[in-house]
Image (cartoon, rainbow, N blue to C red; front, side, top):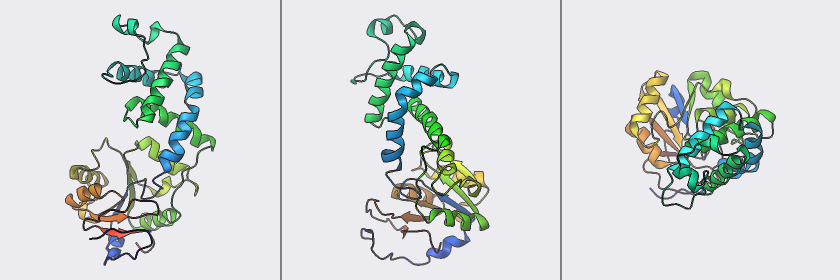
Length: 267
């Protein structure tokens, strides 16, 4: 099939088969939220508030645990130009966090955190600290989750006859924050379950089989919406129906046999 570009007619049939589904499983960015949600809103917010957050919260146990994990990750860095949290002598001596002052640790940790963000590194410690900053932002009202305007009504419609679930590479905790503080209000009552990569990689069929089992439906009774064809391929291999979501701003891709939609009306 050819490339689909925004504004082009949607050349598929039987899209309404999804109306009989018992599970509506959705990706987040490029599907229910703009692709720029993380890059243009969440990442800049975390970067802006990292220094203040560490200064105010580094004595909290959960934040301290994240910093210890960050130190472990930093010590494993090899062959990179990563900033070092511990000076060379203290690394050689096997010294730990307690051996350096709190302000020095924060400054060095911040430099490493920003270095990780600049390279979009998948650091567990970074993700955990970012999540804590976003939580504070959402709860204060400074952050709002931007979703496409057709999402709330689709969630209401689908949850009336089946179940809505989210499957994203972002953590379950981050998903709940996003949907609990959207520009349309709290959508969490409409969402039955949340899944992240702890369930399994998004490009492996076993992950979708596991989600269907966890929800209590057969894969054939589920439909998965995503803008990523390889994710849709994995869901289809597991037996789910699929929809390739082509929102404004998404990159044009080969559909790979997946039915294509630009909006959720009529589904």
